[in-house]
Length: 269
Image 1 (cartoon, rainbow, N blue to C red):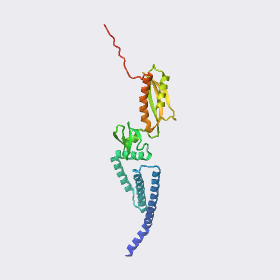
Image 2 (cartoon, one colour):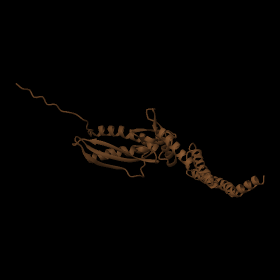
Image 3 (cartoon, rainbow, N blue to C red):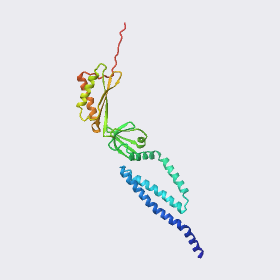
Image 4 (cartoon, rainbow, N blue to C red):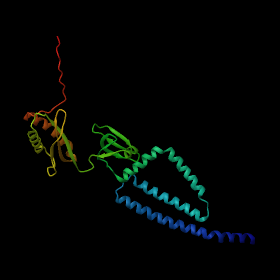
């Protein structure tokens, strides 16, 4: 009996410090992890991260730190963790290979929600598609085109290409081109264009207005007209200018060239 008591006492003396150190490590570690996740959550709140992804990111950080803490505690207690790490690594690799495409779209979705190159309601051009952003999800972005078509674009495609945020700013510069014939008076055409601009509502007149000859084309002298507009007035100004420039040119006898071909037929005896 004394022999067993001595063995128990010997084991207690050997393992008790490790047990106490492991318990202290876990208590202190969980407290630190709690503080870290709380700080991380406050940082996400300040950056106005989307509410749909915020809980996931906080949970991801919390679980990752807790797993590392458990491995550290097991190592202090004397458990060999190398084999567990190898198994977990192999399992993570297998899952990653099986879900490679989905994980890529998922990671891209997180980046879009964190860095916000566009928001819901913005008009954007992505992969040649222009539309209004109706939703930004973890795996895809949803656009609604001007002809009311729903376009679903995987987030991996979004982040791997060029993103043009058309209405990301409050103001836009509207660039238009109008051509006149080579026989028409440039100064007169410029004056007519200026009159139409002066009559057009909602143009931001405190911003620079440009009217200049931009190109001597094959069959026309092209004017580049640039005005500033609020996002909500962009299309209205564009349609107004196109219509009223045509009417004003017709009224003043200024020709608007269009593609045409002359055919000469020779009559032989």
